[in-house]
Length: 146
Ligand SMILES: [Zn+2]
Image (tube, rainbow, N blue to C red):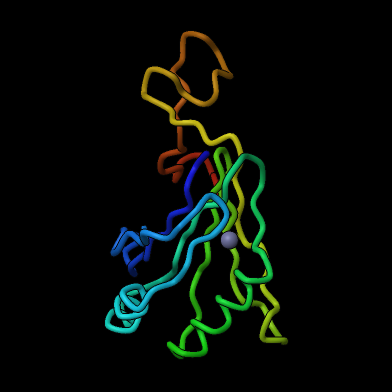
């Protein structure tokens, strides 16, 4: 059985602090004064807090998660992103209002796969022409960037 964990994410999207309290279980991730100190002391440099849920499938926040999101944001005076990760998926939530517990899914991905240069995600097109992973500058083709 997996054990829940969390991580504070800074404004650059990097892990700032791993929250792995001694009393965590497969179904709960208790907060701690240490975690709160990290959140408060870095409040100008954090963008979110990610945590894991046990099992697989698209995760969604529990009622405890939602009330925790709201309480932390109220205490810090800023909105955060709240990713939740399962064994094969990630879902990111943020406050959408107007109610204090109104959070919405803003991004999700399932079946996350790591690609390498020798294993491109698409193999379409002529076999004798390499298919770029991303379009380059298209000033001479009239392309419209994303
Ligand atoms: Zn949760």
